[in-house]
Length: 228
Image (cartoon, rainbow, N blue to C red; front, side):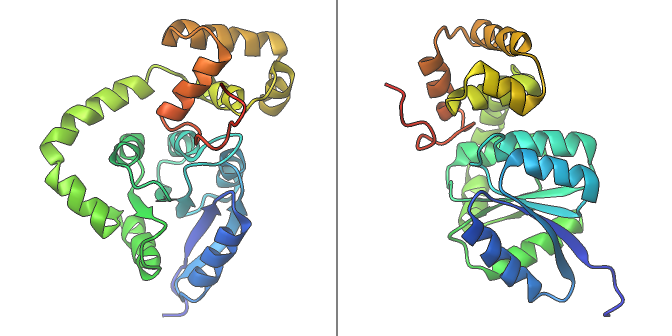
C-alpha cells in the first residue's frame, strides 16, 4: 500500500491561511501529496506546466488571472490533469461556467472538510464530485441548466484567453504599461486587445468593462473599489 503512487495535488488560492489549512488537511492522507501552492491563477498555470499535477484544487477569485481562465488554459495544455474548484461562491452560474470549461468538480468552502480528500480521489479516478447541496440543485435543474450552459458557453467563447487576461487586469485597475509587463507583450498590443474587447462586447469605457468582468465572474466585486 505504501509503495502505491500518490495523487499529486497543486493548491491554488490567494489566501495563505486557506492554502496552509488545505495542505495540513491533505498531508494527513496517506495517498495524497501536495507538491505546490499558488496564490494567483497565472502562478498555478506556470507550476502546472512544470509539475503536471494529477489534481489542482482551484479557487475562482484570484488576482492577475482568475481560476476560470487558469482552468481553461491548464486543461488545454494538460488534458489529463483534473481541476477541482474550491470556492466561496455558491451560485449555480459559477458552477455551470466551470463545468463548461472542463473542471471535474465543485466544492463550496463551507463544505465539510472530509469531502475534499474524497473529491480528489474521485476526480483523479475519472469521476466528478460536487458539494451535496450543489449536486442536489444541479440534479433538480438539469433540464433548465442545459439551456443556460449553452448561453454561458457562447458568452465565454466570445473572448480569447488573452482577451480574458487583459480584461481581468483592466478590471483590477492596472494601466496599459503594467498589463504589458505582466503579460510580456507590448503596450501597443495591450491597446489593440482593449479595442477588440470594447468592440466585441459593445462596451466603450473602463468602468463598464469592469462591471462586465464582475457580472460574468472574472473578478469579484470587492477587487475593484474605485469604479463609480
